Structures are given as C-alpha cells and as structure tokens.
Length: 194
Length: 254
Ligand SMILES: [Zn+2]
Image (cartoon, rainbow over all chains, first blue to last red; front, side):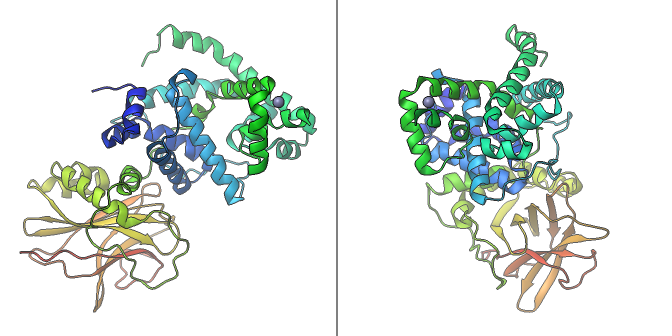
C-alpha cells in the first residue's frame, strides 16, 4: 500500500497516473499550505500547486535521491515557482499579515495524513524557534525567504547597507538553525510522539 | 568581474536575475567552488523554513481541477457537455485551464465515487449531509460543467445527478467574494423564458456548495446555469453580480 516517494517518482516518469495521484494525495496539503504562505492568495496558491505537479508529470523535473529528501526538493520547486509568479506579476506582495481566507486545518481533522501531523509538529518547533529571533532578524528571514527579495530590495526595505545584507541573512538563519538543533536530536532518535 | 558574480548568489537563489544574468551566473557557478558552496549553504539553512507555514485546507475541488488538468491533456476525450460560457460579458482574464480538457476525467471520477456518495458528501459538507444520506440508491452523474468566472475570481462546478426520478443540481464554488449581512449566493437555471431559482448558499471561508432538488418528476430542461451574488435569499431574478455561468443540459433520456 505504501510506496516510497522515490518509487512513486519513478513511476510518474513512466506516466503512471495512479502514482501521480498517490504522490499528490500525500503532498497536496503541504505544497498548498506553503504556496499559500508565499502567495497569500488561494487561487494563486492553487495555480502554483497545479504548476508544480504538472512540471513533475510533463517535464520530468529531475529529482536525484542522493541530493536530498524528496519533500525538500518538492518544496524548493514550489518556492521557485511562487517566486517566479510573484516576479512576473510584478505586483510584489507587501510585508504584512497573511489574509485569512483559507480555512485553517484544525486538530480534529478526520483524515489528517501522516505528513500533516509531521508538518504540524515541525511547524510548531520552527515557529517557536523563530519567535526567539529579534524582530529585525525575523523580518529579514521573511523578506529573503518568503518574499524572495533581491539583496538590493532588502537593503532598501530595511534601510541597511547593501554590503551587510548577506551577512545578516546568514546570521539570522544560523541562529534559527541553532535553536532547532536540540529539537533535531529528538527527531533523530525517534522519540517523536506522533 | 568574478567577485561581482559571486555577489549574485542570493539573487540567483531568489530567482531575481534576468535570463541573461542567470545564464551568466550558471556558467560562473560551474567553475566557482565558493558559489557552489554558498548556494548549498542557503539551501541547507532554509530547508526547514517552509514548515513555518500554517497548514491550510486546500480549496474544495482542487484535486479534481489539478489532476484533471494535468491528466486531461494527455488523454483527449469527449467533454460531457459543452462548457462554453453563455452570458455575453467580457471575460476578465483568460483562464489558462481549458475546461473541456479536464471534464471527462472529473466526470469519470465523479461517477465512480458517487456510487458511495463519498464525493457528494465531501463536496457539500455538513449542511447538506442529510440530503445526501437520504439517497440510498446509486446516483448517476448526467452532466458536469466547469462554471466560468464572469465577475471576480470565483470558480466552481455544476453537476446534474439523477437518482431514480429525482434530479439534483449540485454546485460547488471556490474563491467566492465575501458576503455581508443577509447576502447569499444564488444558483439560477436559465432557459428562453428566463432564470429560475435553484438554491441559495453561503460560504465557509471562500468555498461554498449547494444541492438543489428539482420537483419530483420534472425533467432538466434548462440550458444555462449561473451563480450570482444576491442581497438576500429572496431575489426572484438576479439583482446582484453574476459571478459564474456556463451552458449545461442533461442529455436526452431514453
Ligand atoms: Zn563565485
């Protein structure tokens, strides 16, 4: 019943539509949630989901197992697509609160798949870690990662010298990483309470 | 020159380079170990960030639309009915998805799942649950159309389901505009004599659905369906904006 992502991916390359559906079911919510976070708009997020899976099916987007987890690869592809759309629409999103037009997944969701449970747990940890960053560090992570701004734009938006942008992003991300390290240990020795 | 290239790693990672810059950077990347390493670093440092996103529920029908569109292009087939938009208004923007391409697949999926009423039940959610569970016998999907957006970004589907002598019209929609006060969405069935009311609904988030049951014994004789945004549930003719519309008709019965 359960196939690895790599198996499904390989079957998709042979145009096995059942494999596409299985993979879609597994990742629909995750890809959509991330795309929604990036696009802040349901319709545009759905378009991205469509583009990502379409790319997988039609263009045989190349995934190599030895270069990392499938989920990371899929999310990178999702992010790149989002940034592409945002850039092309030239209407860059302003920094602000996410509009709340999508229904949040609540805890009692009847068919929450394994991935969603895992996501939720990971999500809580990373948001907790994020909350320990200083305000300007959180902001630079937001602009760099979720808005995909250029160094130049970040420098202007935050009113900091261009030459310091890279260093600040790195510092913020490293802090975040450090905060997450102990948690990762927990993850690794299998004590996750899913 | 090289240093300048090396400064572009972040903008490359964020897809901010022009096509020419990107190509130049990629050529540079092949031979610059520093940049390769830096890119890998950005990748690794940001790997967990997608999980910051709050889990949200995808819009109703997204799976059918996405997979239908992807798979539909590989297997051309006959649409169930013509999904041509009927109300002559300038379409705001061309939708990149061609409805006819995915309809057959969705229809097939619907017929399959209607056997267990699973799709219907899922589609119309709790408020119509009673309607759905009442129909114990096997439903037959006789038509399905993609509702074309006319005003705003709303999208949706309408289907005609036959259950013995009973005919139901099922409408589900996403990206609906916000309602205020007593406003509702109204479904209309339209023929030469004008529009007939065919159910009102409200939204959950920006999604909504309604099942409308035709009077017993009545055949489906309309040729268009539309959804409008009404000031209240009592409009006898469309007063508000028509959000979506499509041609729809039930095939002749034997
Ligand atoms: Zn370099």
